[in-house]
Structure formats: C-alpha cells, structure tokens
Amino acid sequence: MKVARYHRSMPHACETHSSVPEVEIEALSFSEQFLVWAVRAWVDGYKSGKGRAGLLREGFALAGAADGWLLVEELMSILAAAAKQPLDVRCLACRTLGEDEAPLLAAIGGLQQDDNAIAVRLTERWLPAAAARAVLSLFEQLAVELQRAGMRLPARHPVPTVDRGLALVH
Figure 1 (cartoon, rainbow, N blue to C red):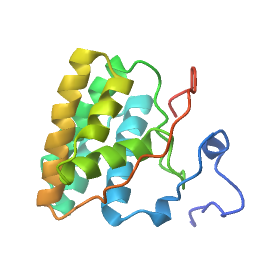
Figure 2 (cartoon, one colour; figure 1 turned 180 degrees about the horizontal axis):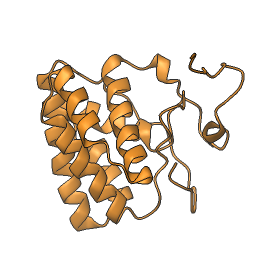
Figure 3 (cartoon, one colour; figure 1 turned 90 degrees about the vertical axis):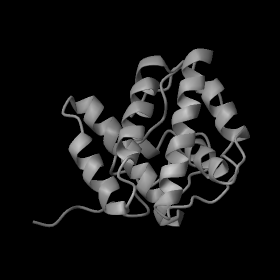
Figure 4 (cartoon, helix red, strand yellow; figure 1 turned 45 degrees about the vertical axis):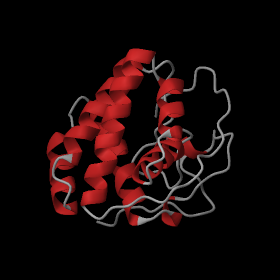
C-alpha cells in the first residue's frame, strides 16, 4: 500500500490558517526536523490518549540523545497543563511549521549558543511565572542533550507571532 504524500500546491488542512510566513519542514536541518517530529509525536500521543513514550524513547536513543525523550515528555506535559493559551503545534503530516514551533526551535538553538533571551521570552509568553522557570530549565537540559548527540540547532530569530486569540492546538 502506498502512503499518500501531500503535493506542494495543496496545503494540508492545518496549514491553511497561519497568519505568519510558512516555514517548510524540508528547509530545516536534520536536528530541527527531529525536534519538530518529537514535539508533534508527543502531541499526537497526548491527543489520541495512546502516549508516545516508547516511540520517543526509541527515536532519541537512535539519535544518540537517550535522555532527550524524557525531557520532551516533561516539557510538553507542563505546556499541556499550564499554557496560557493553546499552542500551534501541527500534526505529524504537516509540511510547514506551526506558529509556536519556529520559536521553540529558535529557543533551543539560542540556548546551544549560550543565548537564553529567546527561551526566556518564549517561556514567559507561554506560561505563568513558576511554570516558565521550570520549563526554561527543561529547555536548557534538552539543548545540552541534543548538542551532546551532535544535534546542533542553528541560531535563528523566531518568526514573529501575532495574537491568535483562542487558536486551537492541532
């Protein structure tokens, strides 16, 4: 059986609502693509109620960052429980980044370059103060774990975001 692939001229359903310039997954480095996959896989498991711990554990082990899956698990669990507003994390089939995925990549890349400014702004925008401090520590640990595995994310400026009001998590 062939798996359907989305044609470039036909956006996936969850890509049609974005108010910021689209960032193609194909244009990202392997490390960025891997982190996007991990976050999306976690969200998929959370939404389906099936969890994805085994899949994440295996993926991070194969990537040489064995403890990274647990950091993603903790980070995303806090975000799911305490985020001030729903985050735009796209589904696994989407070929472009959601509005909250690009800043997440920029935060991890910045932390790997010893610049925590983006990560601090991001956590403060997403979470109440106490949760933001906990998540910042997890971001830092994840950045180190990925870097140890040779997965260095480029330092990028996050795509500017707009007030989405009550956007829905995908």
